Image (tube, helix red, strand yellow):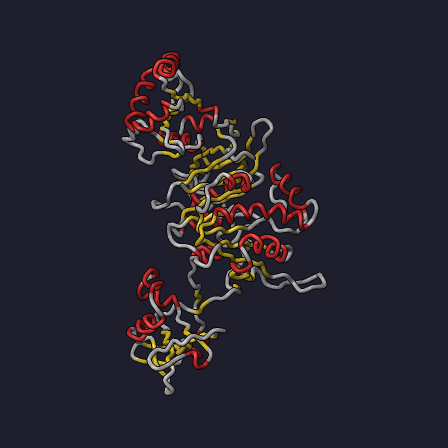
Length: 575
């Protein structure tokens, strides 16, 4: 299940199983040592800020290092990690963290991302235009696909200067330098005679026969394959060369210098107002080159949610973690905004939950939520589940009821379901005095409690009764008032309306931000993601318009309010 998790990533990752992720991208807080590093000023952020900066750079390294150690444990042997940083700490991160944990031999690249251009410079140094992205793998067997960008016209004319019946092509070297040349002759030519070895492009072979078959082929079999597909020609001296056709060509192979992706500027369409937001194209490139569809991607410093949004678009599974409720809520809204019928479901795990929202949720959604919060694994088969809504990690059945004071009949039905599910496990747990099942509800009636006690004392059958509020922490969500301050119609017939949203948080909590949807239908689709003041202006045409505002507190709890406007020379409000 794709997940947005609120909390300290170190503590959350400690609870995860080994080797479950194929790719990890992290963009941790940069070590600037300045107050502008603070984003929202949430209590958790203020505490973490002090933990990171007190004591200087080595304290920051000691804060980050155990987190990267957990990421190494969570990464599959075929997996890769991309760590995003800047000049303040990049050398320390590489030497004291990545080389020590992953091994210097598993360093693949330091990618340089040119994120901005030089502007006016008041300081006595060259402007800083780049970030570093360190690319490490866990072993030598890892997923990687070369990155290609479009050819320039000048490049095409200079390089693709040969032609045959198939079109224009370049003639490329099929050998590579080596310290240990091997005696590998093919069609009368041996690259070892010139101190070289064969340099056969793996991507072309994979494209012709697939990755699994390509792994098993010898160099001569690969060369035969290329020759049979008219991809090798010979010079007058009998030297084989590779023909790379312009059409269809993947483009120019990209190296470790990325200057073709702009930062998220003030006027960028994807900008949502999150201070550390990274561009989607950057994550598209990283995820595409180092993972496959269906793989699992982790971003332990979720921020604005770019990683999980791109992973979702690219049909990867994902987990995003952040200590700030703002990050979790904004990421959720971005995912909802881009959702289509093929989007996989995801869950949002917070510190606290609103009782009314949980209580009135869809029955099947509640079952799955309760099982997951209890630490179990939900039964994805919702209808016809034969009374088992989920199981603990050791297979013990869980049943969930969204009622109060459930009666004795639920004990009888669940007892039968437990036996039917796995009689051997049932007998084993009964004989060893372990629970045979867990029954979850908001409260339990007297008849059920008496029957559960009888089963234990007479038949040695232990069914644990679990109240929902014993493991799901409840809190009150904020209230929200939405009103119109003023409106004015211009000469073109558009009516500009000023709105005010006013949220009130429960005791000891505060409002974090507001979000707006100016064309609300069935689901909230944010036009404005982060509004700290609750004041907005928007222009409308004549007709009926439904507007929604959402308020989010520092626990991540939220409230949605809507109003309907009838605009025709004036503005009539319908609550």
